[in-house]
Image (cartoon, rainbow, N blue to C red; front, side, top):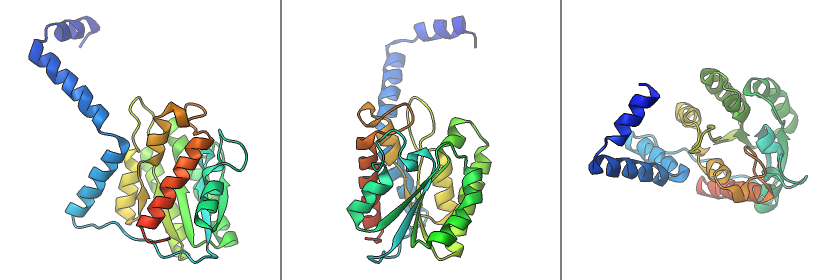
Length: 231
């Protein structure tokens, strides 16, 4: 439809049509990332697939936070990324293994050696943001996330997947994270980053939280670990 024809069509809508358009806009705003995630979890339950728990973390357990700049803490002062803040909250060692700018394919290549070296009890997997920003093949991202989860599980390491929002005006966790979580029966923190990056108060730039935002992310992750029985 041409721009002129589309404009003509919009201008010819009667009052009922305008009301429907407004109601649709309100509905889109009402579907927050948190609500969307809850709807997804409800669908899992309806399909007979309860969310998996995590094993209890010993007091001396090591946690590896693995990802890109969102894990490294880009946008906040040194030592104020979410892994460092989370370590103080949960009283466990949390290794920050974030590499800014890394694609999921490169993360997949480096993960095995890191896990063998650090021997963690839990992997916090927050990867793929650069794939989304650079419009990489989502099928490849899906496969890379699945492979990283498998690398951890082959070593007896539990995994919590952290969803990353897709770029756009209305932020929401990219569907690929929900798909991977379902396919691999992996628990997921499905809304925190979308909520944080959708609020200018918690951002240092268009794609990174500030120190306050990373603290909120750490709080969300801690709460999920409690919900899932790890703490």
